[in-house]
Length: 154
Image (cartoon, rainbow, N blue to C red):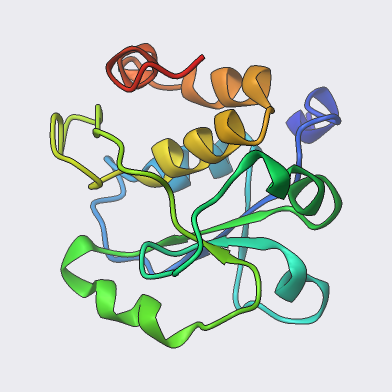
């Protein structure tokens, strides 16, 4: 069954996946399994217009980015926190960083700005007004509600 049909109103969510984490703990792989995001090999063509989450961006994501997400989607880059320097090279027009948030995932619980891919995506969806979509994505994880609570996302 194509789960994506069940989520037809969900904005397009993409992942540039570097395959560097434990597959059992990888939130991007779990979202892919549920067909809530699509892995992409590169950021090209119309994806260059999507919002790309990059903690090195000089621009913070705001509610005004909603239209870009609705039209072109959102891209999370899934790599090890040890290899973050890879993200410096992207330099795309619609790169955005998130405001400071606290991780609720079991690997980095309680750490500032060490979010998993699902936390980054959900935070982006909350900020841009796709709140029900953010809750849907987080509902796939036992700790999803904790992320919402500790960051006071509404």
